[in-house]
Image (cartoon, rainbow, N blue to C red):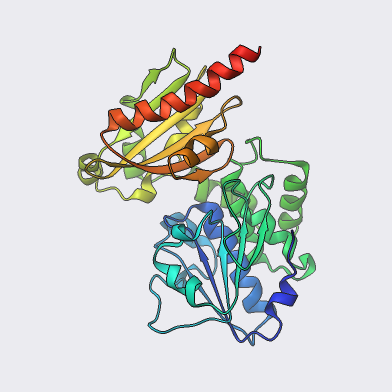
Length: 323
């Protein structure tokens, strides 16, 4: 079910926008796109955006210097928008804002989202949350800075328009945003392709130590906490590694483990055409999309990999038996 932004904002004096922990390109893009639009079109509504520290590359988007990383004590908003967030636990530090808000709205495209807000606009078939935000706005009133933010979000969640989630509508929306005068090639280059020296080093380690398993149908790599400390890398420096692993010829599923604490791993999953990784992630308490999902799991790296691959095998074997 869609929502009408104008109706939601009617009579409101303060609003907050928040996204998921470890914000990626779509999370930042959708949050900043909506934030800039409301600030420009509803100047009488005090609006704040709350996100964990965002990657340096995304700071080319206007307004990112206004992002709040802590919530003021006792702050209560008329409405809180939760963007690109599959469940309220993924809001992280901004969770209390959701709990105390007079009204809550969730805009998301994760198939695992169970509509946890007061009002929900969830479209799993959409390429990105940024695409969904665009559909809620008056396209004639979208400014160039807001268009840049939304374009960045779409670019990141479609892998620069190459993933299966890219629809004709996605391309039409991207064209509308380009007509706002944005520098599309610069956004793609600086926020998606350009890597720091540290990011290239950690990517090199992940590729060098990767392994083909399950008759070479899967590729897996693990980055341990000691490697992060050695390279002086941040979690945001790991973005894109699992997608690079997925490009390996002959591989159906890429599995990337990032050690958060001893015996605890953040697992990123990507598939090409046969495996629904959202089902696997949800089985272990995570979520995501058909071709891209994630989950945090406890145990040794071997235990985590064995548990994940057992679920992958169920889908691969089932698919082969049907052929």
